[in-house]
Length: 241
Image 1: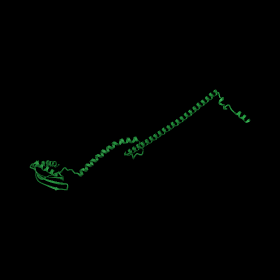
Image 2: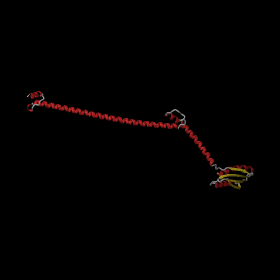
Image 3: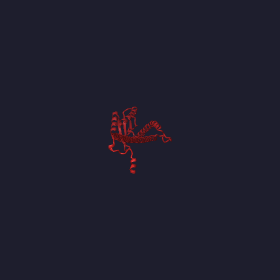
Image 4: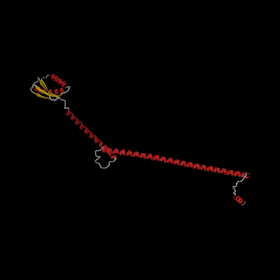
């Protein structure tokens, strides 16, 4: 009995009351407590869900910011690398341009890019003048060689007056296809002048040249014949061209 009485003393106000002894007021009170508890729980769960959403959003935003920063960093590094390569190529071009200048090897100090450009601008007219001078020398050398390799085809006629009215003309021609036509033209010219050919002869002086002798007589007086032979010499040259 003592045991049971001890247990009864420990029984709290929260002891279970039989439903038959519970009144309407107690039921409404307990319903309100349950509703408030449920509402508080729902609010707490909603707050927890909101906090989780905010945390996920913050993490996502932070991840996006990091990705954007990394992408911008990569672009900046790529731009810097390209700019470095461009400057290296530009410097190499300036060095190559400097090497073309005649006084670049004598200079011990490093030239700046503007100094190289200024020197090149000043050197271009000098180079043009030198090219023009060398072109003139080349043409002169080529002309001289052409004269040496191909002597003038203009015939040289020598005049030897053997008498007051007679003279011997000597000239040499290159062996060529028009050789016969030249002689024909010369004989026609002499015939038109009314002079008489006393004799003709030809002599091969080489494989490429042949010399002719013309013994001519005129009916002019001695004084007139001397002048006439000189005039005829010029006419012979023109007929043989």
